Amino acid sequence: MLRNLVQGSKGAASEARTLGQGMVEYGLIMTLVAVVAIAGLVILGPKIAEMFTSLGSSV
Image 1 (cartoon, rainbow, N blue to C red):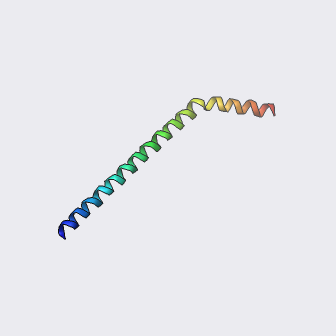
Image 2 (cartoon, rainbow, N blue to C red):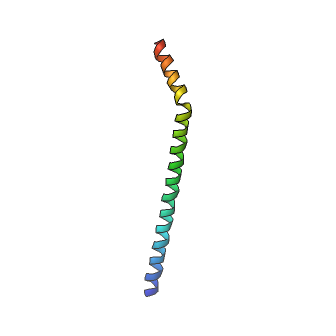
Image 3 (cartoon, one colour):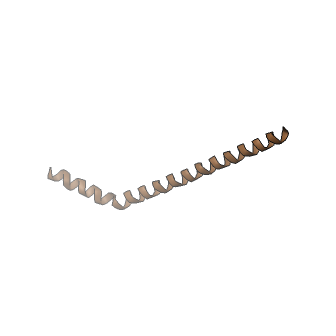
């Protein structure tokens, strides 16, 4: 019976580590997406602003 309790707690710890690893991976992916989005806005921002300015002037 004691063996089952010890094995059960090891399984729960392993499951918690796996869940934690998944959360870390999710966080890293979200960080990468945010960095790419910010870089894209910095690079393309002036061109997009110019496009909207010319569009507003023509209307």
